[in-house]
Length: 626
Image (cartoon, rainbow, N blue to C red; front, top):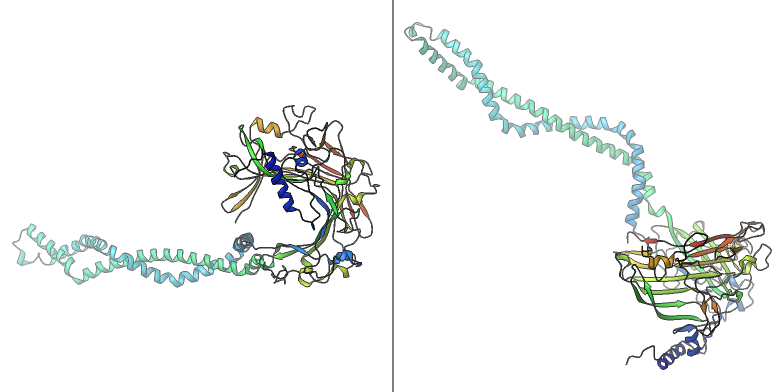
């Protein structure tokens, strides 16, 4: 049987059943909700509320009676060694090796070429020419002799007949046919007889036959010697150039091998993220975990996982219904509400530089690498991350299938429209260096250990079960009151995940040349910077598109929207420009946002910063070589 979501009785009973399945007496992160109230405030979906939630990754296989934070241990954070590992899975080693070889070989070859040519070419060519010239000339003679002997013999016979025959003719006329026996012969008869005798001598007397044969052979052999010499020269040149290459490769071998040897190249990262912790903000950036639970969302403003439909134009002016699945954080309120900035996030990490050929195999019992020889302290970055006052309220992620498009990669693929809001301070205009709550609304990244002994003697706890380091309570980079509001794809300009053969494409699609689409995206900044037809807007801590009413009967909209198209990143003391939704960094001498502190307590204040009104026109990331 098929039920429609328009059936009120069905939607109430079904949704209530789904929420009931998710609830359990031992789980306090979920709260039972009235389906009628839920439908009035947020629409149909599965609503979730975190209540008194906290978590921390402590030692793997911990068999203690409880968390180290409840056992009066002096440094409970030293047990924060439960880890997430980002494992290097390997590379296309042949491709990397080829690229490294090309990059190293050609410059080294060019630098060595002239020296090797001078030292090797001439002597190698002369030696090789002398070695092969006789063979090449003999081969050339054997090749051309059968082809030319007949024509050359005929030519020589003709030549000899013209010279020798005349000589023999004169001889016979003077010595034979001039005697008494031929007294009565006519002159013509004597001439014919002398001519016949001379021709017979040319064709039959060995002296003249050998003369012709010798001249023919000499002529063919001379030609063969020239041809064989030319061939020997070419082969000797090729041989000499090859010897030059051999000498070059011999001279640059060590240099190139060192550059191509991937095992010596520390350009692969291996990361261990330890002690990941979520807890309630406590005003301290010196500790990663407060051991206090936080609540997130309420019955009237919960987390929501739902499906919906919206009329959308994608890639063309045609407007159609587009279905999507959405995960929505609690809405951000229009009025400043510091109670929402109540999350603390902490972890520490060991990040190693490893060789291209390092193993990616792990011990299934521990999740640690089982060939850890190249996880060296000297190749390690150890750092701590602590954030206080975080709020993701107002964030939203929508997944859908894109419409058909003339651009193949855009057509009917996975689309994402998201607003990612990470805010810490609803009133950053009041922040100064003298503010007493700086550490309750900020991020700290630090690397210094409290003492060298506490920094750990081994490479990382995943390998040697050592304790977590105790980081110095002051050193580090402090980012106070960061408010980060990013628009990554919209329903009209989606962020897509596509493929090109074996490669992955992540792309914020181009804004099409369609007024119905780009007028919804581009922004009117006023003062001649845009027109009223442009409906885009910037998402910042104060505003994020059209405001939303709590319920339809409310007199005013109490929540910020999620329809903005431009992003904003603000750090520290910032304020709105009057009459606009644009932000600017304050320039007072006591403004702050980014500070560096060392272990001696010295402070460098770099002031505040704003990057406002960022529109991603087009962004494409594509993997290669997969």
